Length: 339
Image 1 (tube, rainbow, N blue to C red):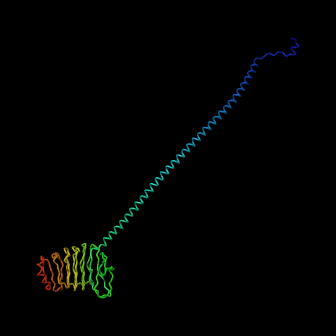
Image 2 (cartoon, helix red, strand yellow):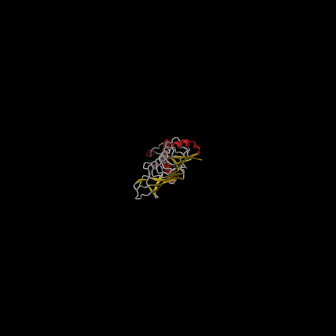
Image 3 (cartoon, helix red, strand yellow):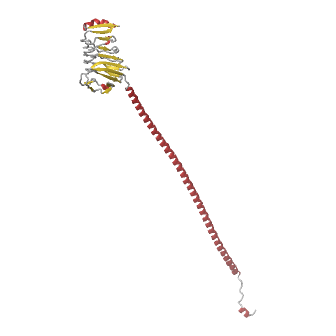
């Protein structure tokens, strides 16, 4: 090789292995970097895909959860609605049951009220029915002097006794006065609807000519004081069927009944009688039958036969020992004693 050739040609340079190595390393580095880049991109892509996948999965899960929640919610709503329906049914049933109970109570109350009302009506009807059953009567004949007169004694409280008064079958007031153009006698019927009656002063000073008293149910007599006192028109009196066992006084029973000719009082029970003062005084009786009178119990008998002339009085034979004393007191009366 010539010098010129050497000058023309640069001198050969020694090959540096390190450069080659560097170059290779660089290349390798480049390749590695490229690989890394690619892998990084790939990884990034994979990561993104993975994230996307996870996101999708998460979204799917969320959707599923939402569906499940909605399903649960729908189920809960349905269950709630069903429960509300059941509660509503139970409430309606309870309300119906309570309403039925209230209605039943009202029915029972109305029924019992009606039953009570009906019972009271029936009671009063029965009471009224029995109250209106005639238990006795007083048949009277009145002397009519041609002017207005009271039928019965205005001083007698008839409201204490259940009475009805009729003249010729027409009912009149207990305090009504009778007025007629006739001067004849007229009949009065007194219907008795009572279990007991107070006869004291019933006919005092009235214009009765005859009185017949009858009881079908043993009406109890409370008192017989002054019943016909001063009844100057009275001629006849008869009583039958009454329970007089509680009567303690008959004082002035016929006092001053100056026209009284006959009485029939044999049916009177006088077991409690104590007072006979002036019982027959100033009458015109021809006979007086006291055979059923228990004279031993009489405590008062003052002037019992005063001013009675020509009359016969009959006592029970057990009191014959009283004849002498009675004859001394009432010399114008004939006393006889019978069994």
